[in-house]
Length: 400
View (spheres, rainbow, N blue to C red):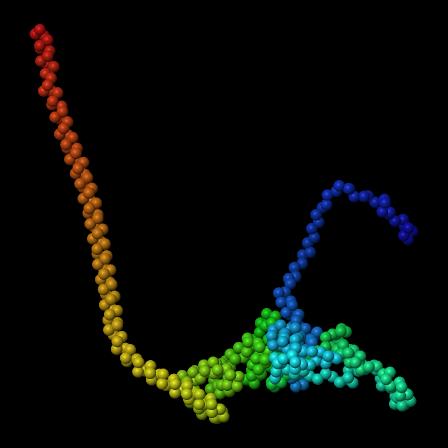
């Protein structure tokens, strides 16, 4: 009973047939299929880095900190992977032992000192009043909680309060950068790692030469050859007489010898550019560049003079060579004409022989026919001479 109405029992319902065949039911949702993105993993990693979620390393430069993931940097840079393998952790303190060998990131990364134990203390633990401390007996002093427990438990709580992450989030390894001065270079490094490392499009666009220098420095220490090549090629883009000295100084500082030689050769071939550069006061601060530039100019002038001397000598024997070539070509043409004439004559001769053969064959047939025609009457005359005519025989019979 349900509100005074008798409910239909399950036993009274009609049971389905035992041998009934299933009926296909088609449901059309009329909704488009959602496709999986090909860069789902890379996009997710980039989003985590932008928001600073689950980052376990910080690159510090001055007052700015750049969060990142150790696994991402280690997967792209072999030097950083070796650096992480040689780290040791003891009592919540990370250090690089001297016994492990040479530091692969020497001159670039230094481990920041850990926070003081007082800074890691829990905020809920309020200090006791001075009267209670004074009244407390000396025997109770060792009963205070050990500092090791406070230091170990403090980092997760601090991360939860700052970033809102779950308990047990990884503690960030703080690494101080040295040897560079532009934070933009660190951003370019991380963009390269997270963009190129995940297959996303990326463009190298530093704002000035100083940023490009810092990028070259970072690329060499992290052993990122492609990033180093981008930074080296950027020195050629937009090259002019106003910035060529500055770019040459960068090439000399980072020992980009091949690029420096290419720029010198280009300057030596442009006398107008040399005049502008020589009047620039900045080149006076770099006498070595001025000396190498003068050497390249002298070498280019000597080479041009040698080429000018060789030209009349080379042009004189060119004439008989050309005449010989022309004669050879004429001979070849004549031989070709002769061969063509010979082939025509041979074809004609073959045709004439064929016609002669046909004519001879016809003559032979005619002669044979004539000979046959002459032989037939001789055969017909022989029997008439041997036998008498039938009229004479009849007369002989009548007479008898």
